[in-house]
Length: 104
View: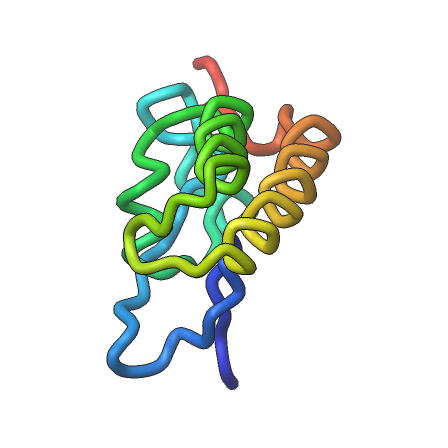
């Protein structure tokens, strides 16, 4: 089964390195369950780091507005990334209780 990056949508086949993205970063109380993890290319995962999706969206939008070619993306990629960030932000908002570490 072919997998695609949850942000840029690129097929995760060689030479693109596949990683697992935590939608809510573990460093920000996200859990390590399948609900919180999505396949992601290393480039998107590295660029986002542990930023909130809102902060990352602002950075991506700035690159799009200023016509920067950055990290090997083309301008169309930025639009796709922004659409997917918006989708995953909505997913987090509606599922947050299932994506966070449970307190003992």
